[in-house]
Amino acid sequence: MMGRALPKSEWKAYFDHLSKHLIGERAEVEIAGLNSGDHIEARWVPLIGITYESKGDVLEIALERLDHLIHRPRDIVVADRPEGLESMEVVDSEGHKQIVKLMKPLRYPRRVIER
Image (tube, rainbow, N blue to C red; front, side, top):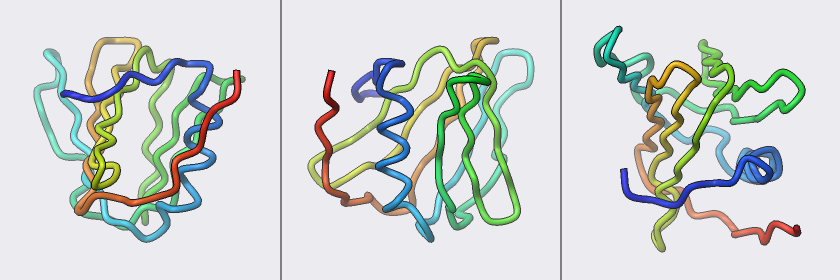
């Protein structure tokens, strides 16, 4: 996936800011891995939010009727185009890719992360 990698130090602030604009947007969650093969976990389900909890090292993708947890994420890449956020790819500790695609690009105000 082409996009920009998010530094781990920015995950919490990025998703806290983004989640305010995600509510009700429809998303698809696909899991791709050599051991498990590729499968769709959720197809065009309304999003409630995405949060990263650094204490437990868990990325939570909250969808209507589904709470998708990614433990010990290694990398997060977002396809954040001028039209808006299209998708994100998370590589977990086992090397599985978990791809969240938005039905339509999400336009939201960009936030500068202070270092």
